[in-house]
Image (cartoon, rainbow, N blue to C red):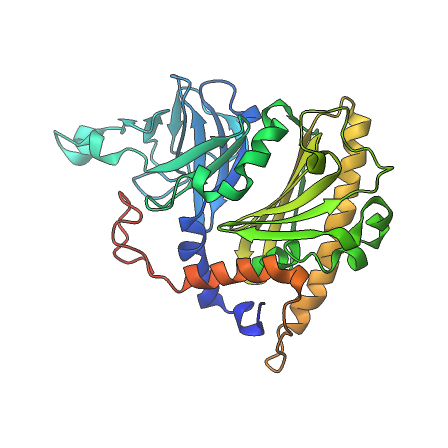
Length: 363
């Protein structure tokens, strides 16, 4: 489990942004914002801003959200439409939707004849559209494909038919005075649930939780009482899926909570050693805004309970005298995730990890 020196250290945080996040598949958004050519979504993978675009050929592609000239951003909204080109506001270099550089103002005067447009296209990132809905991106060329990354969850997630869910009418977006790892450790801690979230105990069988972890995923199954029908009329799922929900985790920072008729996503975006942005969305089959709002308010309460408790931990983890106790059986997936983070942070980058990005000065 996390020790104090792993929470507040700025050098360690900087290393995690490269060795953990840049090697991982990170959830960026969804295809509801990518209907038409020129539609885009933006996000961050560690420190690196990325943009995901729908091309004129219908393909979804991802790039570093930086002009190749002087590092300006290109797309600045969470979602939008850039028309036929992404244009840098600094020197007006512009790029086609497939990433090729197409215009440089006064290029002959500025650079002479024969300027190599083909050498300065946008730097691509890997993109995977999961379950017809959720968009993930990865910077590393050596990271396994997304299907391998989430293999222990893949079969169950296919059963949910997430592509038929729609995004609820608002999202939750707030920054907290937390280290991202402390929040993710809490997300994988099944021990705290019946105490911090005791208002939910009547809607669960809290002592029947099943803890699993494998590869880059972890899962806590939460069976519901027999009188609580959460199936939404579905009969195409397994008995376990119809009579309980899961608190899953996709490394490094995504907490999905799937039910038969909805999927909750909570992403912990690192901002600084003591600041984390939580972005939460719900996708589901609710047919009215009132139904959606009920679920969103419940999620707001859960997030508030978690972040209030973890804020207390953050203050005490500043002490150089404190040492954490042993992990319980119901904290096994938290210990597993922390082990992965430590292993990745300790592993230097391979020379070809981020080609065509030059990594000669990257830690």
